[in-house]
Length: 366
Ligand code: PMP
Image (tube, rainbow, N blue to C red):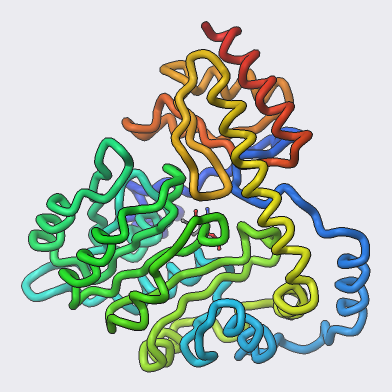
């Protein structure tokens, strides 16, 4: 019987792998690009008080009215430009559900993204039956203008994802090339993914949004201390928000997430800003510490993590670190990342332990 149901599955699923998350989390988790800081007691008390009066017997506000107002202030967008999702993952899914009509003469709509980059763009794209085209980054992990120009001309994408700073390479892309891609792909939606923008030395995403009809800006609360809420959004033109709303699940953001996120973006915002500043300060120290470990190469980072070249024994090194209570991210399946691990900035105490565990693991694996 199950064979009959298997026959009913989308054929694309056979070639897909679910996004992998660790089975046995270690004591120090620096693999997920989350914030290392919990909220202080007084902020938690304020949240607990708000939670005590929520209407658990009612569906959440489908329009996220209060959260939308708070987000529109935070992002600098009009409320009707925002589509809010269960993390930016869901927003990516909403975009790939709606923007799906194949271009003239083609069997599939094309989703394009840099490589290496965030794997969910492709996982969601293939799950929707789109063709996914990965455009290789240059040797400095930047966008190569000529390679992109050829790829856009050849593949005629419907949707392009450009995260800057990029995950997992940690760098910002050359703004001139981002602008060129937006201009050349004027008949595709170019989604500028600002997931790590709070840690970046700058961004032109919203300037490009103002100047071009084909730009969307993606954002999330996950990296700035609120990963548990699962709140993300995209800023698009109001007419497109209206269309995307047709495929958003009506009650997608639970009331606790709406209420806590609204508090966080309002009275708790100074605490979050302080935590972001701490991450940025700790990042410099972490990178200096990594640089001092023999056999390691680390690039400058504009995000809340570092991509670290540890050599061909990356998986073994990560396993040794795990045994020492530290969880980092590996990329064994990716040809250009196989020698690297990704390390999220932790608290000062955590970073100290991470550096010692990495130095030990390097010596052990030598
Ligand atoms: N975009 C990028 C570039 C990311 O790295 C991530 C998370 N790793 C996301 C989007 C998704 O974040 P979330 O679903 O938590 O908003």
